[in-house]
Image (cartoon, rainbow, N blue to C red; front, side):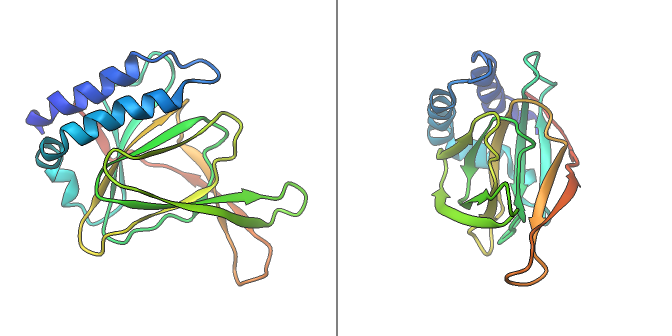
Length: 191
């Protein structure tokens, strides 16, 4: 992974240059990170090749923890992998496709009944991002659109997203269950 330091360092430096207050400018951050993903797409593919060979979903921390408290991760999505519907523990966050493409379904939870309903669907290709603000439940389900290739994404969160909830239903029409989850880090990438 030695050669990956240049692109990963550039992505990390962009994140470090932003002021992460209660309402960070995630649109500007997405635009700046997306420019690197577009410009250095070939280099990223080569430099992150070891992560593209994984056959399981993995979260990799990019460099040491940020002084602002924000976390910076690269996630590897094996072919056709899909997450359950999940939240982001009330944190703000930004998710950017580096390589490959993801489908992102947005969901809303009724605070009185606990029922969920789908709000929409987006598709992220290299350099495309989605984000959510502090306090926004940020409920979504993501899926790698490729049936053969691993996708890689960059995630910036306003804190440590080590615990969150996944939402599941036993059968159609039954009550949604909130299941506590713990997110494991596979390792640390240089940056």
